[in-house]
Length: 82
Image (tube, rainbow, N blue to C red; front, side, top):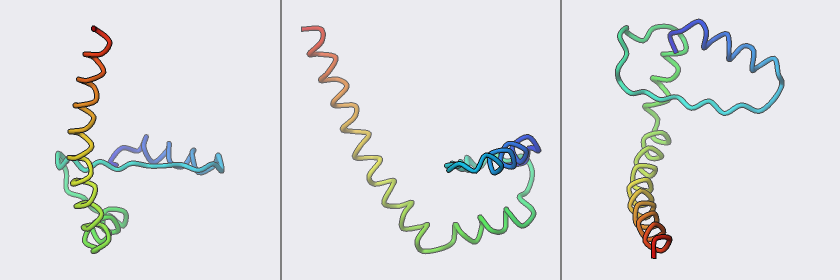
């Protein structure tokens, strides 16, 4: 989250007093090194057993779901054209 606009949006969202879900995507394409307290916090969080196990379980689940979703879509399109 290198952009000041992102931090401004998060600050504004905090003022709304509503629930907010933030999804962080690390696509490993950063053009600058991660620095600061926030980067350090997330680096430490990624090293926990909870995060590593969750990441592995989600990857397994997603592979299975992705196969099922493609099968269902193929079956649905065949039934609509028949």
